[in-house]
Image 1 (cartoon, rainbow, N blue to C red):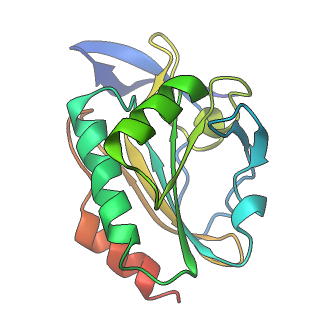
Image 2: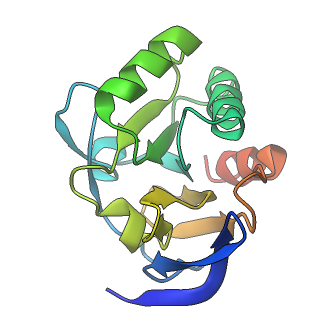
Length: 172
């Protein structure tokens, strides 16, 4: 797996990004993650036939990730059932389950890459030195093609929600 320096800083220090950034038109890579009950789930296969919004976040226990996940949960209630939203972090499943329960998250799927560590490198979001993801958002069409990809330059930056939702809606 490729390691890249000079791409991202974490707390004012250069960190290593594992994997290449995905690009528009790329075939989305399948990845195995854990659901909140520690069961293995294939991220793309489990949402086959749907448009997917996939959010890579550092940790649900941070204020920006909290806002982002709550916002996507709220947006999901108004979206077609042909759009699935998956939020992936390195948080352990029991942490995710506790947080989701307390936050009332019931419209999006929250999954952990802590065990298999496939998603992070395949989507170019894993920060080697700190073991969390840099924030990114992807839209994958029903055929598995990346149609939208945005990497936030700073951990505290949120995605452009309206742009992401519009990109997903136009595929349905």
